[in-house]
Length: 255
Image (cartoon, rainbow, N blue to C red; front, side, top):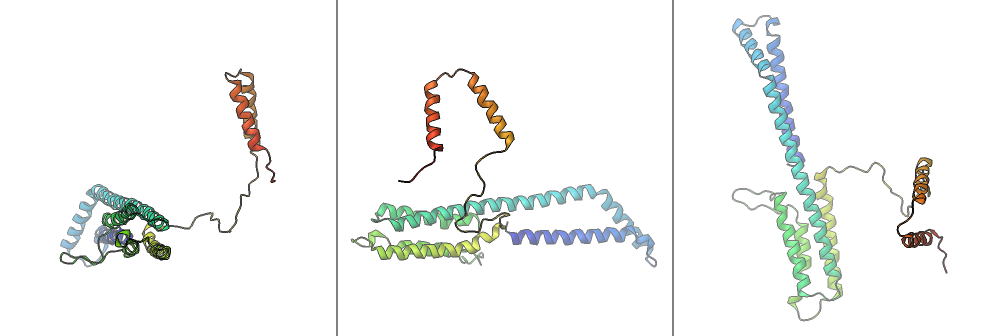
C-alpha cells in the first residue's frame, strides 16, 4: 500500500468521522433547536441513542480497519526494501561482470538472468503504470531495462573476439547512470529521514580518546585480581595471549 493510498484512505476516514460527529452533535441538541418538527426531533433522538449503543462496535471496527491499513503499508514497505536490496545486489553483479578482463559466456548469462529476475520481481511491489484490463501499461522503472540493454552489448556469443575494454567501460558507466537515476525516485516511497547526527566532513577521524569510565576500570581490575587468584589450567595459553596483546598494543614505528 503506497503512501498516496494510505493518505487517501485516512483522508476518507477522517471525513467520515467528522460527518458522524457532526450528526451526533446535531442529534444530541435537536431538542434545543427551536422550530424543528416533532418527528425530526424524535428521529434525531433515536439516531443519537442508536449511535451511542453502537459506539463500542463502531470504534472497534474503526480500529481494526486502521490497523489493517497500516499492516498493508508495513508489508508493502518490507517488500519494497527487499526489492531495493535485490536491485543493489544486481547492480553489483552487473558492474563486476563489466570489470572482468575476460568475459566468459557463463559469467554473462549469470548476470543477464540476474537482471531479468530483478525486472520480473518488481511485479511483487508495483503493477505497470497505466495498466488496464486491455492494456499492458508501461514498466514503472525503465532504468532497469537500460541496465539490461547495456549488459546485452557485451554478449560474448555475438563475436568470436574478446569484448573490447572500451565497450565494457561504456556499459559499466551506462549501468551506473541508470542505477543512480533509479535511486532518486525508487527510495522516495520509503519516507527516509535525514540522520540525527550525520558525519558530513570528509577525512573525518575518531574524536574519542582511548580509555574508559572509572567505574569500568574498577570492574576490570577486580576481575583481573580474581582471575589471578585462581590457578590457570593452561599457563602456556595465558602466556601466548599475553604476548599477542603486548605486540598488538605496542606502538608501531615505520622503518
